[in-house]
Length: 132
Image (cartoon, rainbow, N blue to C red; front, side, top):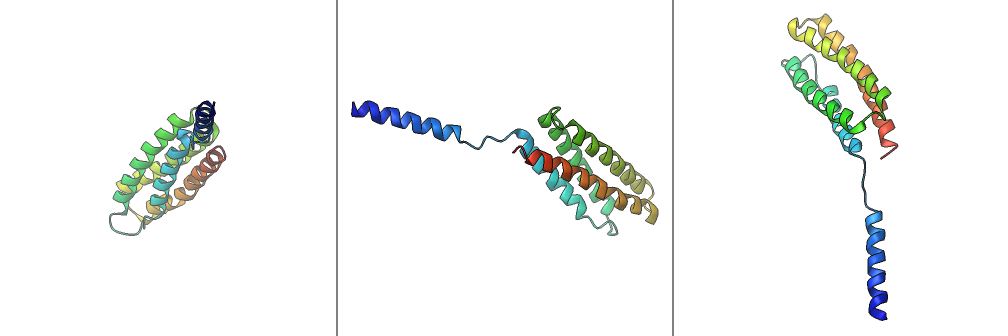
């Protein structure tokens, strides 16, 4: 009888511990990766030599991270993802122009495109975090 009680207690405890595991949706991790990549863009000094190249590399990483977020988020965050997509397109368009003709005007356009993009990513991250 004691053995049965001990086994039952052990099984119940195991079930409770499994039920309390930290199983977060995949989108939680992919949004964290995207936020890190965006943070890297915010740290680029666009007046420095090689800044456009650094920006181009960072945008490639962001594009990949954003694709993962889209896959993980499914349709649950479609409005927020659309806003991020729009802002990302504006940022990459500005970056492409700066790469083709790195002038004060084209670099200023890149600088102006960063805040709306980071804001859209932050809004998505905030909404996703509420479900993590």
